[in-house]
Each structure stands twice: as C-alpha cells, then as structure tokens.
Image 1 (cartoon, rainbow, N blue to C red):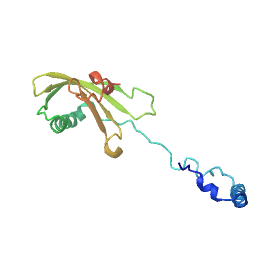
Image 2: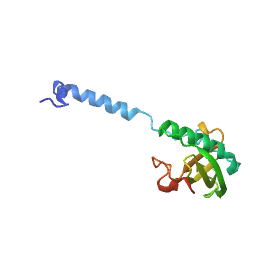
Image 3: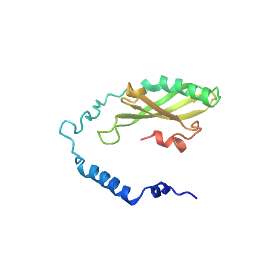
Image 4: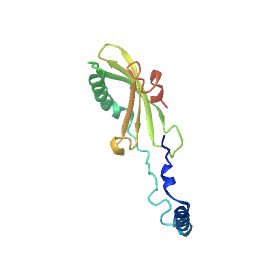
Length: 159
C-alpha cells in the first residue's frame, strides 16, 4: 500500500538538508505582516442612513393581494384570492432599538375567495424591496402559510 510520503524516500539526506534550509531562509526573510493604515480602516463602511420614512399600513394592501394571488396560483395550484381587507391597524413601529431597519408592523382581517375571514400580519420595511430599493412588504395570512415560512400562526411575521 502506498503512503502519501513515499516520494520522500527518493530524496537522500544530502538533498533534503539544502531544501529545508532554503525553505527556512525564505520564511525567515519574508517581511512581517503590517497593520492597515488609517485610510484602509473601515474604508467605505459607513453604514445605512435610515430616515424612518415607512409607508402607512393601507399602502401595502395592493401588494399583499397581488403577491397572495401569485403565491397561491403558482406554488399551491389554488385559485384563492383576497377579496377584501378590514380592520387594518398598526401594531408597532420600530419596536427594537433605533439602529435597526425601520419597520411598521400591521395586522388586519382579510376575506378570502373561499368565504373565510382570516387574519393577515405584515410589516413594511424601509429599503426592504428588491436589492434594497424601495419599501419591502413581508406578509402572512394565518391558516394559509402552508409551508410554515413564518411559523405556526404567522408568529414570525409579528413584532
């Protein structure tokens, strides 16, 4: 059976000594690692500048309705659509420290085309759209989160 170091047997002690000395000399003569200069420290890492301008809860309803219809039809082969919204209200605005991404958490009732009234939980986030452009909307309709992306009862969609 071959071992990974069988090639070392082909070298004689006379040839291994100079090779080891050359490797040691190269490593010993290499310059030491340098710390970053002041221009390299945190260059370009200034962080986001959030204004806290997040749309009101009512502004996200059309997005939720269209995305719900797309999700149900495309992924679940269902013809369910949202036919109406009611009792839409804000639950929290920036519930954590002020350095986090500003979010407005809302909840309300939705009427689904199957005739059932369900609860929708959603948040609108600043710079949360595609590639950080525009406002993003994350939503969950309780009872229709079939893959539990937001956990049982849409728990992760709430603050």
